[in-house]
Image (cartoon, rainbow, N blue to C red):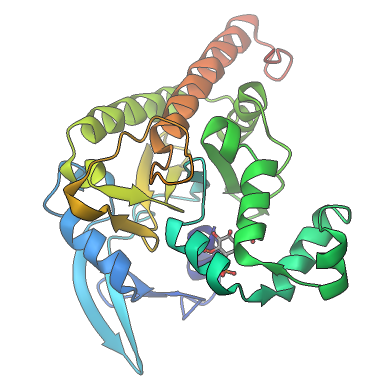
Length: 299
Ligand code: I3P
């Protein structure tokens, strides 16, 4: 969700520094350096997935900080509409699980976020400490959103007027996700079809990608971007928690996670998204035929 927020700031405010992002001199996006993410982007530039990720142009230092130079995915779009979908059935790394068991640090900010959504969610002990572990919070987010069931969740949508909607926490079913996709695209058939084909192409590329087979992809998003000219594309972003699997092993990505495994469920999410877009296309087609946009609902 950070990308959505920061890009919104960049494009709508002063084009100056915003959160983890800045605008580069050549119009590229500068993202605060992360060794893990830089390694991924470097490998991705030599992988089948290159057409699906922002182009990586190396590192640059500004003041005290180092940044990753990335293609601006919003370049050339007028009043872009953006959706950030976090992929996978879990958003915590196996390492976070191990660390939490060895010595979990308590997070009062995460306790607060939890209580704001559901005051009954923390246990009596967590209420007493007014804090939860990060792992507990991430697992709670995964199981109370569509991450665990559908393998993705909508983190936020930015509409063409710059307003940001984040209230997609209650989505659990494919039909609810389809409603959100219809809202995001305003039931625009060409845009829905463009997204659908792009995801099918991504699915093919993922099957043949060495990077994908050999990496645990956690907390990465698919960024959906379109504008009024019906230009629409989807990009893989955010690789700060994407790591190579040890000992040359390979992942399937389409099976649920179980303790001891590194499976991330990325393809479960992609399959759900493709199915949901298929449903949205059917609904938008009926609406177009009937001339009654907004009256048909998904069941
Ligand atoms: C955040 C979300 C991020 C996570 C961040 C959480 O919660 O789970 O994925 O960052 O942890 O606060 P929410 O979206 O509900 O606000 P990572 O993916 O990097 O772990 P953080 O506060 O430690 O950055």
